[in-house]
Every structure is written in C-alpha cells, then in structure tokens.
Image (tube, rainbow, N blue to C red; front, side, top):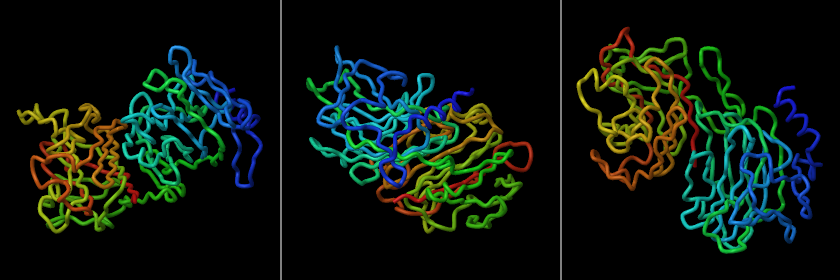
Amino acid sequence: MPYLLISALVASLLVPAPVSRDGWHSLFDGETLAGWTTTGGRYDGKAVWGVEDGALTGREGPGRAGGLIYTETTWSDFEMSFDAWVDYPFDSGVFVRMRPDQDGMQFTLDNRPGGETGALYSGGYFLHNPEGESHWKQEAWNQVRVRVAGNPMHLEMWVNGTKTTDYRLPDGTRPLASEGLIGLQVHGGGNAVEGARAAFRNIQLKPLPAGSGEYWSQDKAGGMRLTAAGARAGWESLFNGKDLTGWEGAGEGSGYEVREGVLAFLVDGSSPHLFTARDHKNFQLRLDFKIARGANSGLFLRADRNSGNPAFSGREVQILDDHHWEEDTKSKLKPWQFSGSLYGLVAPAKKNALRPNGDWNTMVVTLKGPRMITVLNGTILYDVNTEELKPMQGPPFADRAATGFIGLQRHAPGSVDGDAYAWFRNLYLREMP
C-alpha cells in the first residue's frame, strides 16, 4: 500500500476526539505525553520532555543536547493553536510535515539575542522575520496559531493575535514533504541558562479539507487558473491570457501580442514598457517568464506613472540573458546586472538560478513597506530593507514612490531568431496590508 494511503489510514485511526463543534481537536491532555513521541521525525535528540504544571515542557538533555517531540499522527493541511512560553535566552520552534526521509518546515521561536519569531527555516532560511520578536512577550505565555496548507506550502503564523508570517513557497522550490509529523523543539547547544525551558499548553489542531492550499490549477501547457482557495487567500490575476485588459503600453504602445495565453514581447515596436492600469503598494507578485538569446527585460515595481525612468522612480528587478550576454556583447556584467538583481544595487545571491534560454522561469517578489524579497525558481536571491541601501542611480528609496504601477520592460532584444524575444504568463498578485 502506498505510503500516503497508509499515513492517511493511520491518521484516521489516531485523530483525537473533537473538543468543539468547529472541528478542533486536542493534541495534549495536560497530564501525560500520550500521543507524542521523541523519535521518527528527522531531528530526534536527547532533549528531556515531560509535563510540568499542565504544560508540555522541554529542556536540554545531557551535554546540552536538543531534540524534538513529535505528534504520533501525521498531518498535511491544518491549523494549530497553542500557548507557548520560551525562557530567555532559549531557542525553540514548531516543525511541520516532518518525516525521516524528507524535509519539512520550521516556524522559528528563537527567543535569543538576534533571534527571530516567525521566520521559516528548512536547511536554510526561506523567510527571515526580524520584526516578529516585537509581538512576543517575555516571561509570559504567548498565544500562537499556525496554518499550513498546499504544496508548495502556504505558511501563516499569528502571535498574540497579530499575523507575523504569511508566505507561500514559490513554484519550483525544492521538494518538501506534503505531509508528516508536527514537532516542538528544544534547540540545544546554545547560550541558555541552566534549566531553561520551552513549554506548550492548550495545543489544539483543526484539519483543513483537501485543496485548502492549492491556489492554482494547471493545464498541460503550463497555464494556471486561480482556484476558489486562491481567491480566498487574496490572489488575483493580472493577465487574462486573451488580451491586454488592465495593461497599458508606454509611448505608442506597440511591440506586444497575446499568443495562446502567453504575452509575447516583439522585436518590432517602439513601446519601452507595459504597465498596469492600477497602482499597487504592498503586495506579493508571481509570474513566469522565458527569454531568447540576447534578451534584456525587467520588472518595474511601485513605479511613478508621472515621473521619468520607472527603474528609479520605483525599483527594477533585472531580467537578462545571463548565459550569453558577456560572450555576445564582449562586455562584463556587473554583479547587480544579472537576472533577479535589484538593478544597480543588489546582486542575486545565486547567479545560476536562471534557467536556460527558452525554458520557463518563475519569479516571486514580495514588497511590503521598505522590505523587498525576490525569489527566482525557488531560490531566495535577496531579502533587504531598501531604505537602508544607497542607490548608485536615482533618489534614495525613502524618497521614491510609496505606491505605483507594475511594469514589464521592453528593452534591447539583441539578436534573436523569430519575431519575439521575451514571453510572460501566469501573472498573479495579492495585496498585503
């Protein structure tokens, strides 16, 4: 019998009795470790777990050993609510979809100097969250709620009623587990005072129906349609796949054509960029693109429609033929000119994230206040506070437009076969507060 079917059967047998009419279940009885285990979830250790004053409590083991305690039941899509007390300084976390043979994800509860609450970690940071600690109360119980749904996962976290984390892993992210155990952590090996603890109580879980995190359906050609769950999560389509409704072409507006659900940028034409009819402020944007040899394009964000160069009235994420540009132009690219860079300023952390010419790439950009995160094909290229940067061109980011259009640059096409050099599809956006 396949592993997933076995897991589903086991889960159906081990689900605790509901304690309310709205689907919530108790995972901890407040008296024993029934339903919990310290093995079987990839990060087993020798931390000491027990029940103290009605709370599931973990402390470092011999030699400052850490470790996790896991639910005996596997879960996929769910909401989980609990109270947490993490001594200072001490490092803990909530792990989801844990399996011995595949990575899951961690919500951090790192209550140490420089630690983060609500960051996402799995073999490296998927999302930093330096602001999360401001919602955490020291020497007190904190009410925490997490929500996990979909594949790639959409991960949300609330601390004391404030949402601290809201992140969907980009399409193309390295495969993570689609279901697994839930783990609570004692990190170990840190600078905690002797006897420091991480304690949890009132641990409740609500399973979510299948498809709760699937925001798009995809056809055989790669075209994506928004699902009801995606719409509820706030996503909206920016491109209907039929025409340029919702978009305007700068200048004479020539150089664009919609072909079989794909927006093609033509070699012939005079328009410098295509831009949205609406302005946007705080948002998460995802899109697919592919380019031909010698192509040069870009993504404009929060650009002022009443100013000049949108790269400097807002900000530009570079799209360029990294693979052949230097060879064909006999020039040397600066680090901040490679695809995915914050043009003129921030180089991508990984240069080879761009796929070969003619292959589709997925880019996800999150822009909230001064913070900007760019992900290309599942790789985080940078996570920066733009107002802390000093642009080499244009005004400081604090003086740039606080809201503006989203644009697709139609720049130098280079020497290409055919009549088009860049293609875009599956453009979706969700506004953020």
